[in-house]
Length: 296
Image (tube, rainbow, N blue to C red; front, side, top):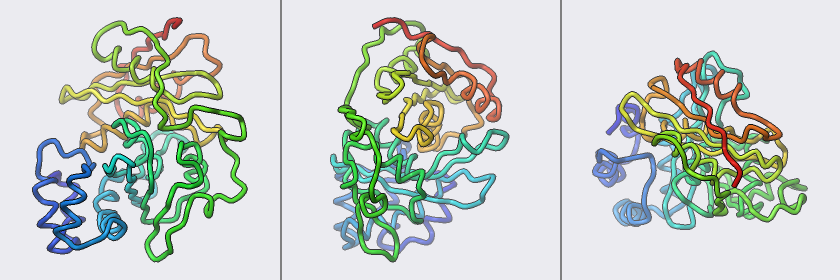
């Protein structure tokens, strides 16, 4: 089990510790639980799904990186596939606050990058801010998404975001988590291809500025992230942050990035290059290559 989980793990009930230990001690544990894991945990602890998600929140919050606020937020996104995904807020010393990641964004993006195509619920240890409510409204589950908070009755996103404005108001048909492939051709080495593949599955229905980032760590692992655009624009999640979410959920040190590739179209109406380079610089990585997405 990764060291960052030890303190939170010690606060769990003995039954949950016993049930979780074999899962979290596995070398390939990536802050997510399969449908089979969930069923086993429910049987061994006698907790229902909602209570189990609440019980897991301390472990999700343990993934937080908060050098600025020192305020850890955890989230558990429950996929319709039955798989659950941890998420946590992330802050980057030396970068602007606009580059931070919120816990709900983290859990949702974690699910998306793992191939989840719809969510049925998200459990959070603190009430979602307006930024996150708007981000969640981009999902294909829309305002029907269930939100669970400690000490409150279950509610839907519609309860938290009344009179919502979102993609459906702009007649957008392909929503966040819907499968999509923009059809850009693969080129270059393994890292470049990972960035292009990420761009192929990015969500940018408003600007059509598809983009993807791939990071190679000092351990040799590759993590790729996609751009997730939002109807309200500002809650959009850059592709670098998506890749950093996946890297963090795999317990990799985000200060150990060896090289990075950004794939985007040179004639796009907006670009990710400068913000990506600035945030990577704050993380100690100056090795960024930009690959131009060709015509499809």
